[in-house]
Length: 229
Image (cartoon, rainbow, N blue to C red):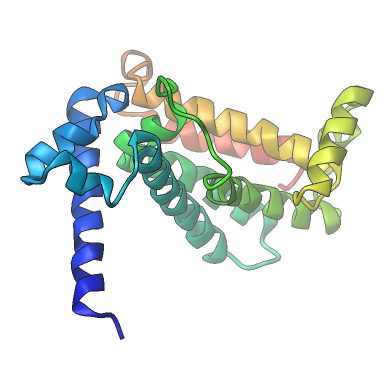
């Protein structure tokens, strides 16, 4: 059972994070300041340092939370489709990527936008960051194993050096053949590009109110390229 002290500590951590996200939204991630957070919360800076030893520790915690939220959205979309509905899973995860970014622009830009000056990406973030990619790689791997990915998508000749890199990734926990990793990265780049262009305002002049229609059409094109439908 959680003790009163633990509950108070957890509530304080939640308040620190929510105040940090507010600060990120108002002044940008580069301006994130533990002293400013402590001041807004009515704490002393040394008091806040009992929870996070420095700014990098807080940024790491925020990144883990954001990646976990992102991954959970992708997993929920995947799991809403039958295991053998490969096209449906690719479609659902691709759209969930875009929708999560559209619904959480602050967190999306925090994860994928301009790097935060002075922040060092630590191994603590890696499992959460990798989890999101493994969702996409997993559905691609299942479709490939079932023989559902066909045509040019699997016949492309990859440079030897790139094959070697994919094999190295396989040895550290990305459990699929190089062609699967390549296709997963390719789709990731496509959906990431769509999401980023939307969030940075580049779609509005071209598409008006037809952003969803365009994104859906692009995802369908990717599915066709894979030969899934």
